[in-house]
Length: 103
Image 1 (cartoon, rainbow, N blue to C red):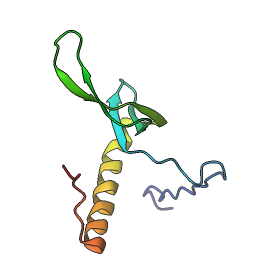
Image 2: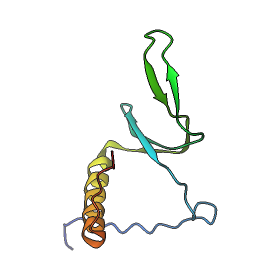
Image 3: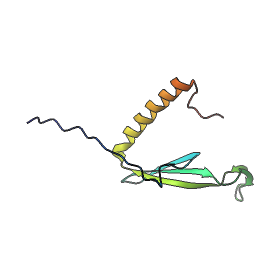
Image 4: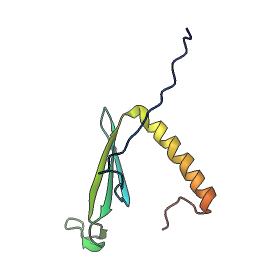
């Protein structure tokens, strides 16, 4: 018997209800002691100029709604970062477009 750990092969299925997915223009990341939380959101109305009542400074207010909240264990964050980098590099090679947001 081999003492090496067996390879893990996760078979993922997607329900018909989630197959289409949700569009998200933003992601907010925060954490607790037990997990990292990714809140995916999209705008619900056009941005508008607003005034901070305390400071009196003007700012652009972007009303957005969370369309999905995903919690992942800290052990998966590194794997997620590596996978995103691999896919972003492939996207840039295939399309010639940079993954950096346009300012």
